[in-house]
Length: 125
Image (cartoon, rainbow, N blue to C red; front, side, top):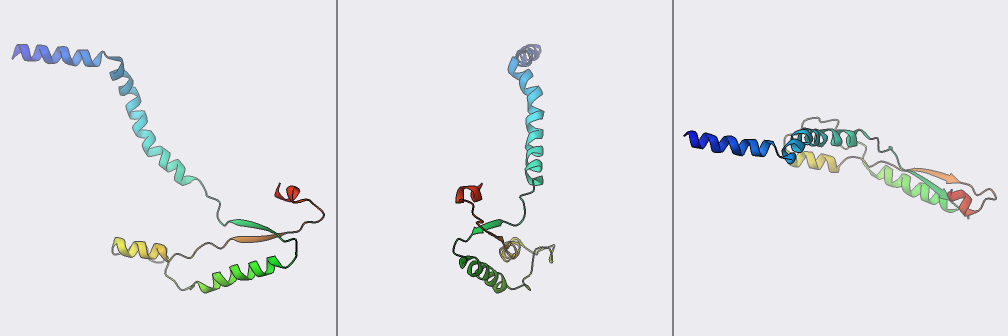
């Protein structure tokens, strides 16, 4: 039994004296904590809300048709659809996915940009 303890002690000390053991002892907890902190930071980033679409209409006729088409699509969606906020606890995962699919889609914000004697490159900038 004494020989077994001597071998175990020697193997343990050999592993502890290795540089990689010291490096992993220090870096291991840091890396593990980053796996918890990084997703929290990513989820805290604000994505920006509604999409803004600038429409440069050189003819003067396209913007109104585009605006009407977007608003008709918004009106087609039923405002009485259940949302995730109205029902905080779902009975099962299948119901949860169905309510997520029924979420109303965000309406893009259309903005008409007049040319005003500017070139297209100036407007893009």
